Each structure stands twice: as structure tokens, then as C-alpha cells.
Image (tube, rainbow, N blue to C red; front, side, top):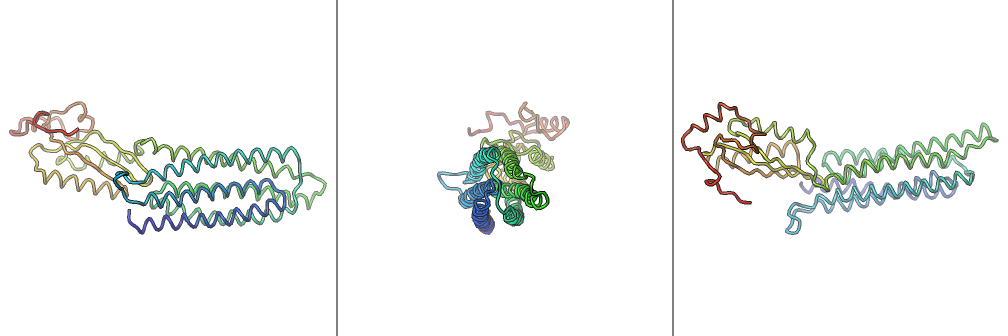
Amino acid sequence: MDAHIHRRKAAVALLSVVSNTILVLMKLVIGLAIGSVSVISESIHSGVDLLAAIIALFAVRLAGKPADKAHPFGHGKVENISGTVEAILIFIAAAWIIMEAYRRLVSGKPLDAPGWGVAVMFFSAVANIVVSMRLFKVGKETQSVALLADAWHLRTDVWTSWGVTLGLAIIWVGEAIWPNVNFHWIDPVAAILVAVLIIRAAYHLTVESARDLMDVSLPEEEEAWIREHVAEYRPTVRGFHELRTRKAGSYRFIEFHLLVDATMSVEDSHDITDVISADIERQFPYSNVTIHIEPCNGDCTPVCETDCIISEQERDAIRRKPGTQVTSADTPRHE
């Protein structure tokens, strides 16, 4: 991954930090001034988003460091760790919001000047739409788990901001039309709904981020593409097996054994692995492809039969061909 891409990721992560800092201060000041638990809860939400944005900024910078002796597979998993930590923070924030909203619902304390709350929440929603769109764009283009996690945080903030804006607007307009009717219970109820949406987003983020920490295989459709593409090189390629894949942050790791003619030269077999590796890396950017060449003599083992791509007639022809009977004793293996 080149330096230009890392600079783009760091720049958009920094934009999120600046934006969230401004929104936290605005929401907190207005929320305290008018006594709105929903606006204060949104300031806490944005505070978590700010912390998440700082974590994301740190993660994309560290993930961009090249592999070294201590980290031969690179630093990509720091983005998954970042996303998991962010999800945990969201759960904590949601719990705090629910407790605070319940206290306000029980006490029944009224709001002062809800119009100011409407204004700040509307501004927050618009700002987060703009920043989250930018985060989604760069996150998808660079396949950054940390940036996509940050984008989902802000997108969740957009939904909750609209909800709080609507609740405050109902209180504001309702008091003007029906001054004797109590609309202030809407504020803590809106805060609880905010918390529920936050928990839902945190759950999905936890699943998405933590999955790759366990070295789960790539999605089925990606592995299917690899299998189908390798099969396109038939009959030069006679089969493959032991396909193993995983992902760390933006990086994919793909490895498998490739079966070729036992009489093929080392140079030719090396060339075919280069071509296949380049094809996979074009389809899935930021991939590390490792291919182990093995000779095929037509005698399929149970392991290689799964992804054998030649017919039974072709296998018989190979077995009858002079000079292709290669046994495990003739083929050195390195465990």
C-alpha cells in the first residue's frame, strides 16, 4: 500500500477528529444550558465518536507501517483491534445514556429553550452526514476497517441526531400550541431510543471487527472467485488444494498448493505462480499471495481430488505418459 493511500487515510481520520471535537463542545454546552438529557446524551455519543476517531487515526497510521522483523505480516490487525475497542466504548456510552434518561424520566424535570437544542442537533446531523460520507468513500476504497468503523459511528450519530431533533421539535412546538400539556417526557424517551440504536450499531461493529482477529477465512464469494480463476488456467494448472485465507485490517493473506505437470521446469512453474498471484492481487488489492508448486502425476489423493480440474481421461493420459511418475519419496517437502 503506497504512501499516498496512507496519507488519504490519515487525512480523513484527522477530519473526523476535528469534526467530533467541535460537535462534542457544542452539544455539551447547549445540553447543559437547556437541561436536555437527550442533547447531553448526544454529546456523550459524540465524545465516544471523538475517542473512536482518535483511535482510528492512530490505527491507520500504525497499520500503514511496513512489515518488520517483529511483525513479518505487517501491522494490519491494529485496525481490527481499533474497531473492537470502539465497539466496546459504544456499549459503555449507551449504558450511561439509558441510566441518565431513566433518572430524568422519573424526575420529570422540564427543559429550557428547546429551540436551541433543535438547532445544535440539526447542525450536528448535517456535519456528520458530510464527514461520514467522506469516511465511507476512503474506507471502502482503501478497505480500512478503522475508517469504516468510524464512518458507521458517525452515521449512527446522524440517525440519533435526527431522532433527538424531532423529539425537541415536538416539545418546542407542542408547548407553543398547548402550553398546559407536558411534552418533556419525550426528551428522555428520545435519549433511550438513541441508546438502543447505538447498541445495535455496536453489536454489528463488534462482529465485523473481532471476526478477523480470529483469522476467519475470507467471505465465500471471494474464495469462490479465487477457485474459479485458478481453474481458468487449465490444463497448464491441473488442480490445487489447501486453500487458506485470512484478513488483517486492509490486508488479505491467501495461500494454496498448485498442481502442475511434473516435467515442467522450475522457471515455467514460477512464471505461472507470478501470473496467478498478479491476477488475484488485481481483483483483491492489498493481498499477499503465497503459492506452493507441486507435481501432478495423475494419481489424485483425497486432498487434491476436491479441487482437481482435469478429467479422468486426462488423468489416465498423464499416468501413461513416460517420465511423469513422481512419488512422495522423489519430491522433497519442507514442513
